Length: 325
Image (cartoon, rainbow, N blue to C red; front, top):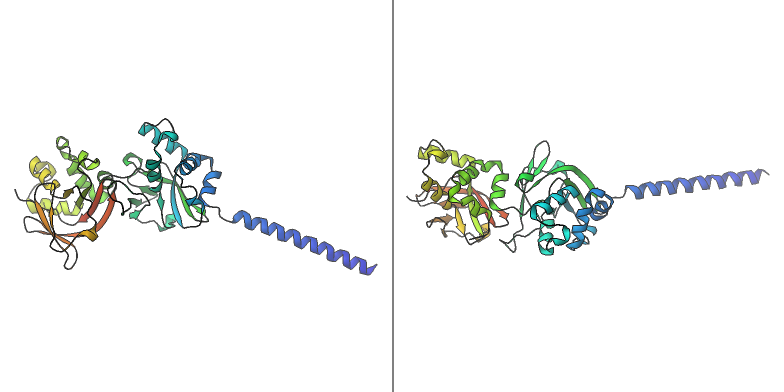
C-alpha cells in the first residue's frame, strides 16, 4: 500500500511538471516576435499597407529574416494619399510607382525611436534622378518624430513607435511618405528656411516650381544654410531678402544649381569647372576637403553631401556663392 501511494505521488508530480512546462512553452511562443508582415496583417489599421505590399510584391521580403525599419501608414493615411493623387482605389496605382513609394518607407537597418536623431537616413527607394543613390529621408527628433517635414510637405509623423518584429521594427505613421523633391527636402530641414524664403520670394520667377518638377532635371543643388545667408547679407550690405534686386536674387540662386545632372560627391574632381543654371561657372577644389571657388574668388566649404531627392541631389555649403554681375 505504501509503495502504491509513493507511485501515485510521483505520477501526480510528473503531470504537474509537464503542465508547467507546456504553459511556459506557450508563454514563450506568445512572446516570440512575429515578422513585420505578420504584425501588419494582425492590425486592422494596417490592412491597406498589407494589400499594397502584396500588390508590389514586397510582402515576401518583409516576411523573411532581416533587420528593417518600416514606417507604416495607417488605412486613413492611405485613403488620404489615394484621394490626393486622384486614384479611386489601390488597384489604380501603377505597380512600379507603388513599389518605390513603399520602399521609401523602409530603412535597411533597425532603428528604435530612442536611436533616432535629427538628420538624414537612406531609404530603399529610387527616384528618377539616380539609378544607384537611394532616396534620402529627413528625420526630425523633438517630442516626437517628424519625417520629411510632416504631412503638409508630403511626409508624416510617427504616432505609434517601436513595435518589435523578428526582422526589424515598425513605427506607425499618419501619412504616406511621398518621394521628396529638392524643394520638399529644403522645406523639411529648418537649416534651410532662408533658402526656402529666397526660392519663393519672387513667385513670378517660377524657380521654386522648377526645382519641384522634372523639366530640366535632374538638378544638383549646392544649398547654403541659414548661417550662410546671414553672412551673405552682412557681406553684401543688404538688409534682407526684400532689399536684394529680383534679378540679382534669381541669378544668385540659379548659380547654386546644375541642371541636367545628378552629381554625386564621388563624381567631383579636383579643379573641376562646373557650369551652372545661371550660365556662369565655379571651380571645385578637393585639397583639404571639398570646397568651391566662385566667380568672385570666394571660397565655400561643402559641409554635407548626397541628399538624394526624386528630381536631383543636394550638397550643403557654408557660404552663399556669388556670380558676377
